[in-house]
Structure formats: C-alpha cells, structure tokens
Image 1 (cartoon, rainbow, N blue to C red):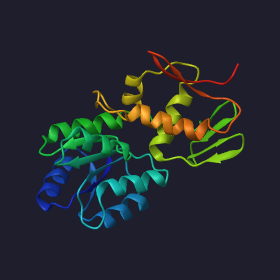
Image 2 (image 1 turned 60 degrees about the vertical axis):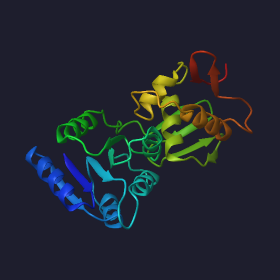
Image 3 (image 1 turned 180 degrees about the horizontal axis):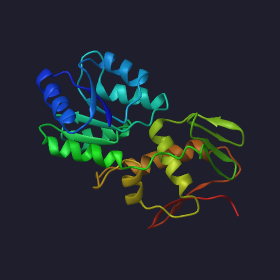
Length: 225
C-alpha cells in the first residue's frame, strides 16, 4: 500500500514509518498539518494515517478538507484523546478509524489491512436514484426533483447507505457500523441527529417523504407507492 503519514512527533513518525516499510508499504511522511494536506490532495494514496494534534492545521480539519474535495481515501486518526466523545468527533469528521496512543504497531498494521480489504467503489456505478432523489457519486452531489441539496460529508455517507439499501429496513446498529464504522454503541444520538438533519434537507418542502422511521426497528428510504 502507498501510505501518507502526518505526524509531528519525530520519534513516533520515524518508528511508524520504519515499521510500515518493513511490512512492505511505501510511506510518505509529513510533520506539519498544512504540508500534509498539500500531499494528501496532490498525491494518490491507498490510506492515510493522521495525528489529530498537528502544527499548522489540525488533523480533523485535514480530514474534513479532503472529504469535502470528494476524496474517499481511508483515514486512520491517531490521538491521545480516548473519550468516546472524542472518537465520535473524529469519525464524524470523515475518518474511517480511530487509534488511541500509545498503541501496538501490530494493531495499526491490522487496521490498515482491514481498510485495504474493503471493496472499492465500483467504477461503473456513478450514481444512485430513488424516486426523484439522485446522488452523483463522482461529483458528490445530491439533487431532488432537479433541486440541488447542500449536504455535509457525513450526511452524504448516511444518505448513500440508505439509498444503497432502499426499500429495506436498516437498524441503528447497521448505520453505526456501516456509516460510522462503530462496532460499539457510543451512547449518543449521533444516528438520530443525522437522520433528523437529513430529513430536513431531503424531505422538507417536497411532495412526499422518502425517509421513514420504522418504530422499534430502524429506518427505511423508499419511493412512494
């Protein structure tokens, strides 16, 4: 894998980069947030490992910027912050995984391998459509009835998941795992909050609702009968 490591602690960066190279990876290293962002947007990588606290530009700001640009490159956030709220914030910024320092290199390598096994987005499938709701997977845009909807990166991921499972009930647990990559319950209303925001953008002001709550089960996005 070709990897980008953005880490300002020289000893940590040197250790991680050396270990990754010993495992057959190609690694570019940056110790500054702004320089790291330039590399992230100018080069093509299989995955990125980004420290949360960086000089020049915060790690979460880097992730938000590359996601806003349409990049789907997997990102692992490194941090000393271990609270659930911190993990939630990191994942909501668009990161795919979150690793708390100190950590064993074997775990980092295993997480990278897991990200590498995820199937790539099909080169053939460039759009999704349910009723008059359309999603352009390349331009990262959403329209309904020809009207463009302003949507945030995490909302886009949530809507994409719902559209890919259109007509089927998806549970809160499925959304936590499929959209936020949580394999635990963060004990927050992150799903409910994002569903509410998404409804306000996708359904409000249109002739019919597409996103429905199935009491006691979950949610379903479906075309009207």
